[in-house]
Picture 1 (cartoon, rainbow, N blue to C red):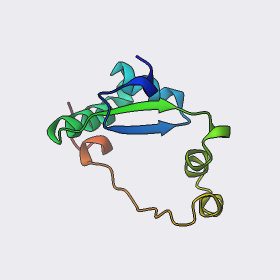
Picture 2: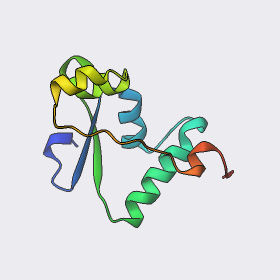
Picture 3: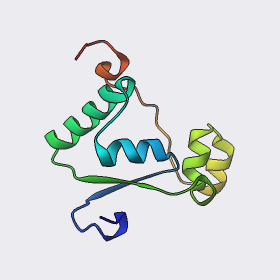
Length: 99
C-alpha cells in the first residue's frame, strides 16, 4: 500500500530514518527496539489512533533532519512558530520492565 494512497490513516509520521519506517510498517524490530515498538503500538491501539510512517529523505525533510541533529536554530528558521517539548519515554522503553 502506498503511504499517500492510504485512506485508513488518520495520522501520518514522516521521518528521514528508513529503519524507523521499516520497523513500524513491518512491526518487526531488533530486540533492543522491541519495547519501543510494542509501547507505541499498544498506545495506538488503546487510544484508537491509526497511523502510518512514511519516509522523506533528510534533504527534503528539513525539520526532521534538523530535529535529528538537534539543530534548533535551523528548526526556528524553517518553522518559526514550532514549539518543541521535552519527552520522557515510558519506563518500559527505558528497560524498567522486562518482557
